[in-house]
Amino acid sequence: SRPLSRGCACRIYLVCTSMFRAGADRYTVENIKTIFRQQDLDGLGTISSDRLCDALTEIGVRVEDLNSLLLLYDKRNADIKYDCFIDWVFGRELDTLAAVPEWSFVTWNIAAINNNPFEYYATLEDEAGYEELMRAVQDFIDDPRERDVPVSEVFTPAMFETLADVMTELGWEGVDKVRLMWSEDFSKRKMISEFLKDKEIGSKRLASMPDRFTNTINNTDGRVMCRPTVINNYHVEMADLEAWFKQWFDFMFCTDVCVRDKKGNCEPKKVCSLLQPIKRAKYPAVTEEEEAVSVPLQTLALGIFDAILVHILNSCAASAPGGAIDWHQLKVKLCDALVVNKQRNVINILAEQPAYCNADVIFLQECAGAFIEAFRNNEKLNSKFWLLVPKTADHCRDQNSLILVSKAILEDASAAEELDLSGETLGNVRVADGDICAFTVPLQVPGQQESRRVLLVSFHGDTAGLSSTPVLSAVRKLAADAGLPVVIGIDANTYAHKDPKGEKKYVQSFLADLEEGPSPLAHSWSGSDTTSWHTTFNARTFLQPQLNKAVRFEERHTSKLTDNHPKDWILFSDSAFEVVEAAVKDNTGQLAFKDGVDFPTLTFPSDHAVVSTTLRVRRDGGE
Image (tube, rainbow, N blue to C red):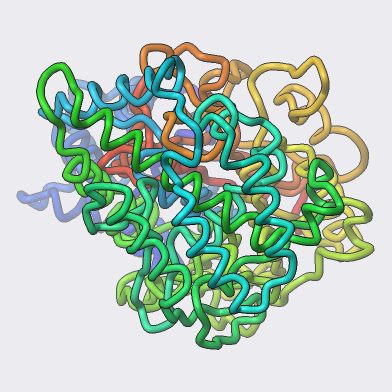
């Protein structure tokens, strides 16, 4: 008979032995035969082909492999002597197959920074008011007409004076200059066309920067505190602007919080003390004068921004054609799924989905400090995985890359050694603290005493994806210098379409970069159609700070601004590994991907799909 393909035989063998994988026994043909003897109720040494198919299907063997197997064996209509069958399937190659190290990998950008329940369009079943509200807000901002009133009618002079007084009492520098900016400029601006839509305010980060630091604060005592605004999980109703301002002022200047700094230390302070100067070196649109007064200036811009959003929501909800909409209750429903229970939902997906909780290595990106605590408090995950955290982890920024390594293949976390990917190693490439997590790890070979040291890297690229190739080049050089193979889980922020200005990383250019030079990298996606590799599908609403990225409700599936790109990758040393199972993407938490669905959803908490794959050490490399 014709020889059985190595891939089919290997898959059958691995499935049959997967239930014993956590043990230390060396698997033999006898282990496999035992499974079938349990199906031989008469003790005749034979089993029907139907019973054999049922048994193998129940333990996960793929139907196409079964059909191929039985066709080759030519025993589809007869009782099968299973001892002969197993010997035929594996023969003398069983030990060789077993000796080839194989590990499963998962990568997921959990998007910890997305605390705004209205940032992306979502589907709320039986909630007609949601779509009506989103369309009304869109119309208000797109075509405000007489509703485009001066800022001073929303953020009133009395509000400004109260704000200026407290900033002066705190000793902030530049309050007098900001007072002049208010009276001669900001107070007179039309709130939509000249403030919300002002591109300079966006490029200077005058509203988005303070929003990042104060939107949602994770205290070291476990409390989560939210600024009174539309775009977070703040749960108190803001029925009018006077009620809102009192809540906002008390939060910013009278509320104590305790958060960890970049070094992980904690010191109680007022919320307003979390604000950081906006540096002209990083944001060139900021003038020298604005940089000097950037703390009081961004505080004013944040107050104006929040006031405008509260005004828009209250106005749109009250004047809805179908009757008044309770936008606060819609917000609560979204918050429960996407914010309040986000860490729990992420942990649950990782802990309850067998493909993830039984994985060998999980790469994570954009993890909040709170995720680290949630992981340590989850008995199931904590018992299965070691958590590798980079020394540069930033507990304020909440965008850390982490690595989980199964305790089944790593006896002690102390054996993992962190590699420094900063300073001269990266040259002129700017990488924020916590974005890179790189460790050399001795991975235990299942069923054997030996281990193989591999460089594992989790990385979150910049928004444009331009740092991805330089960082990967540095990783390749480090790995080559150390004589180690590498596996990388990365949100590369690569884009499906070529940017004429070259300001975003084009996926085809990225693929060419992987192959160029020494120590080339391969990826685990199958085929060449990159549209099937897309791991994001979402569009921003008009209720978020970057209106230049907002998409109209009816255009969210077709707009060029919709984030529908191949961003997430599992990369590996091409000379050391080969793909056993191609990449699988998941936007449901159930190891399934639903095309055309905006995510995050009420049941899937991230705007990036989970990607998983299985790699095997090449026989001619990776020793």
